[in-house]
Image 1 (cartoon, one colour):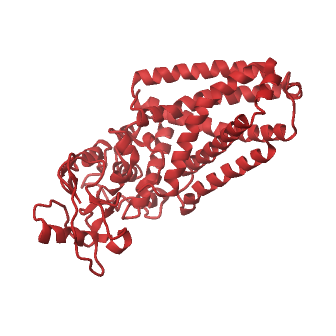
Image 2 (image 1 turned 135 degrees about the horizontal axis):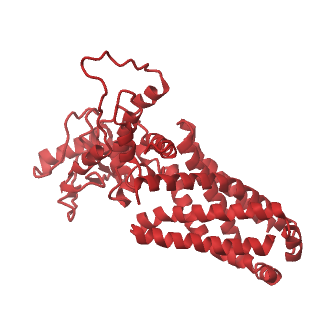
Image 3 (image 1 turned 180 degrees about the horizontal axis):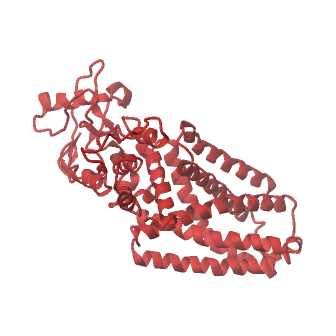
Length: 104
Length: 112
Length: 230
């Protein structure tokens, strides 16, 4: 019953949303300490932190993709191609993740 | 909450989502650019501090997040944690206020 | 096959495999030849009434329209009562809450005209009528309700069928209760609880799209709120 793309798109959208809601306070707090930014940026060079950053970026892209899918479903006329939106959202997230990974 | 209030939450969520779609796209591009260029803290702050455009942009970004994140969590809390009612909504209001404070603190530190 | 009430259990049966066999054939065989105490619902057996809806391998389906060949896994089938509804016994559920929610969503036509008035003239191809017509074939079988996870997570949620029906009536220019209906379907128990899993649309045996209908309700409620009509 849950083996269809739209359901997975929902799960990814919700889990990434919760992850971002948990992450963002830390992100804001760290940036608020901008005066110590160099020492903080040094800390971010650690591989585990880089991996965490990459996960956050993928979560952001996934959440954006999923969100665009919801906006399309709720506001655009109903068409069969909207089933492909879940795939488009996933593709977008992967693309952004790759771009970020390559930049790291 | 009344059904009118819940309808307004839906509108606020979709409106903030549309706004965030733009903000996030811009943010992702600038962050990937900064990482690829290997910018140091001083170099980043040099570009961001005293920039009224970026200050305004990120203020709007933070405020959109303070609307969007708590409303999003609202459904998760009721459906997956069984937390409903006024106490949940109050807790989320506090979370929104907290996000606004800590977010604007960051915006001021980086862009003011 | 599920036996008993909510605290029941699955019981195994061996059923002879036939060519062109449906899941309803399997259930019928068990009740007639193996265990006459099995309780289940059916009526037309030809895919028109929706009475035979059950969970087959965890998926809600019309058992009379589900061929065993399509769903059997390692020569086994798991058959249970529709999800999200109280179990009366074995494969039979209590559908009262399904229809109560239909009523709560104001899923009932209330016309403006009397028999003294002329017929309402509604062009079938007009966009509102075309959209309404796309949703009116619902026969209340409960498959979408069983498929919906929000129904499982939120006991007050009116559900896809009730909201789909409300949408067809919101679009009906002859109906006089539009505002009351929008009030009835708004909020956490109504259209705003839908997260577009699209399970209802995936499973609907009549190929309706409650997802699209509920999206329509969200838009109409938003418009009404913004204009102060609600």
